[in-house]
Image 1 (spheres, protein in one colour):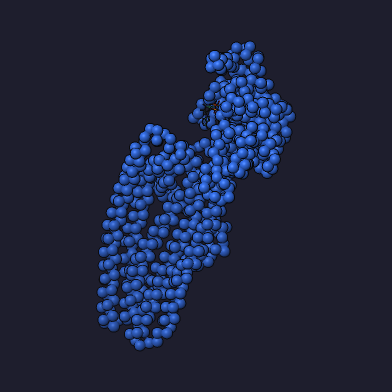
Image 2 (cartoon, rainbow, N blue to C red; image 1 turned 135 degrees about the horizontal axis):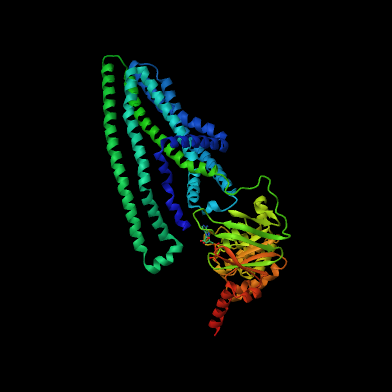
Length: 619
Ligand SMILES: Nc1ncnc2c1ncn2[C@@H]1O[C@H](COP(=O)(O)OP(=O)(O)OP(=O)(O)O)[C@@H](O)[C@H]1O
């Protein structure tokens, strides 16, 4: 369902708009971080960008002022040379500055987004365990943090500079008007107040609308992804549910559109009303100015300046409010980025962690209790057993018995709630997690299939391994011949994602489930220096012949190595030195195959059941 998760995330942040004090704190902290990022990303860009933005503010005021001068000189018969030069310079600046601004803006935004993304994933990488990645709230937040981290800083910097530009423009116009008439300047400024209030209200309503239609949009996206996903394509065709989902998708869109239409109508009404107010103010001011011009109290140029200033102030105020609201909303979304980058570690690492040494005596689980959260039942209950160095230990148990959970604790992806896990007598919590993991080669039940080449898929098991080592591991896992026969051998991409891109990588290939499983095994076997091999269901996707081959190869590889093996196929694990049977998170039996069979307990029952199944099918 990961595919669909993203569609449930979008407007979570709007929720915070209900709390103005929190909003303010978040915005101020966000603003400081955004400008911190901008300064670090490109100080040499930020200053010229700011200058380019703000200096453009002077252009409309200069044009209005030059127009006034030109008209006054025409009326009074003065020289126009200075005015013409002024117009030429202003026109040149007006033509060149926006292009420079765009270039600087794009470059700065790219650098900030890269830096923000890098910081975010640096923090994510520092999480030692996986608890956070199984928490849907955290995943939602991470996705939003990524979204806003890439977009918000650039938008906020541009928004703040645009506000500065707007303020300079308004101040310039008001200053120019003051030169003509003080009360006219006050009247024009006062006339902008209704526009300011109305736009502010509209912006808040727009944010509330986004919040209201968020669920509708998420559902629409959900149906759209469903209709285009490869996972769902089979069932949609088999059950004939395509038009059912399409109608649902359209219905969601129609509902959201109805809400949007309502908002558009409201905006239209407000804009028309503001238009009337603006026209009335303009007419009143112009009327007064024309009257004053008729009486010789003001010049023709003053009339032109006034007309330009009234329109300029009103338009700039609207832009200003929009930029402010947009920056505010972006800063609220940015709170997710701040939350993730400031989150505390998921597992505590010792201040001076020890390096995990080669396994000499064994790994001991001592009174280990674990549950995924206080709301969940105990997955492991008072587990105590030892995996002696150099021995193979098999874990057996029905679905949900706690086998994979135990492996996750052993690799320190979680910490026990009670009890300890000891590596040669040292609590794994005192060890450096990376050094511990370098000593363990693991194949998880839900291993990864990377959309990379075959060589990379194996090489990831031990970065820096050469091709020979990779091929050796593949051979041990019984997949060398298959990989060597691919169109570009080990360099063949194991994916359809790059299919047809003809970038020299060749076409991608899709492996079967069992072949992927062998590949995952090769990845674990690549770690020659690993002391412990953990195989969680290494042969569940293999055919019978392959299973025998793999187990023979593994037995050779395992000799002298400590291994922990999990399998539901008891034939695959019966040769282990020690078999541990788990039931509902507790150890219920332990011993070797023959002693457990003789004990006639859980293991004996499971083994007989499977053996009988094979006998029945053969007969
Ligand atoms: N991430 C998780 N969050 C919450 N509960 C979980 C999580 N993973 C496993 N569990 C629960 O913990 C218990 C043990 O699960 P675990 O996967 O360890 O069993 P298992 O023995 O490996 O089962 P299987 O043989 O089916 O792989 C189960 O009840 C399971 O529902």
